[in-house]
Image (cartoon, rainbow, N blue to C red; front, side):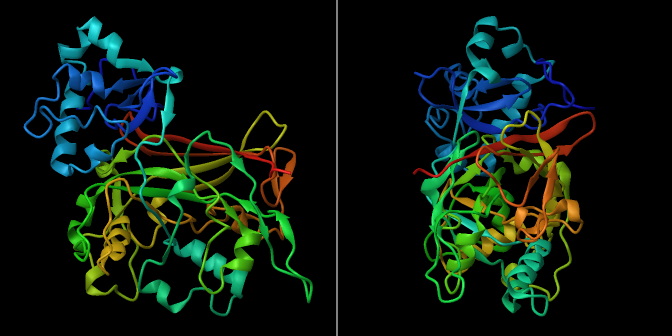
Length: 420
């Protein structure tokens, strides 16, 4: 029997009672930030639910984790507390439970229309790491930058390759992205040209939000890595391909990546995603023992990218992909990150890297879609090789249940010109 909420939720809504993703919001511009969950067209204010004494289970009773300006304290509590909170919220919101349904005063205080709130970054991100976990994306990038002879480097099939990103420039969906300036590859003996990036790109990614961390020097076992993952979000790791191509040898990405990374506001928990697990791809060669999982799984999450060109009213779909295309799983990424003793902390962000599929329409960035600008992309009459000022990029993602969706909402950013 499908769980129903007393709040009317359209079947196409991303925010069903089966989902209940967590975020942080302000009901009014002068309000303090507080945690909430999305349900239909509303945000349920968890500070009000906590104040009413409705989190009465053994782990959350008297906890102040929902009276914080971010979710870091709650995500640090671990899976038993997350399950307790989920069970409480699903019961409170169900059609057969009168506690919230029949309390008009509490309903008015705690249920806030989604279209009236300001959504904020849900966690304080101490550290951000970006992986490179899609084989299709890796092969395409290798061919573009190094040629077809050896597109995938030897180490890639043995470990989840990654680089350390910049947490300070991670922003919430809806934040404008300023076109970065930097050096590009020189022509002949000329000095490298400097100026606004001419090859600005999106990258279709998702990202893990770390829950409990690990002590310095104590790696996370691969088969308990999921207990360190609170949930996942949509992520656009904007890239300046011309800056990146000149700087990335020998140490990898730097200024071509760290000028802006956009997150969707709602964290979808692993509990909500559990019905949508699928087998991860077979890994050949088999990974080393510390990366070998008893059960290796991905999630069947449909992903879509739309671009609204500057000056146009309508957006155009440019990519349809799926998280299930990842070669290295979210749990392998986390376990590998800690194998040297590195300590993760609650609220840390682990990006998947660009999620490309095998079909031409499933490529996760313009670098691949236009083959580094050699081809142009048609967008309802406009053409693009890379992003132009005023272009707006929107990601969406969801899982399809029986009469409901478990979705992530949107992750949106618009390009604005470099300062003079």
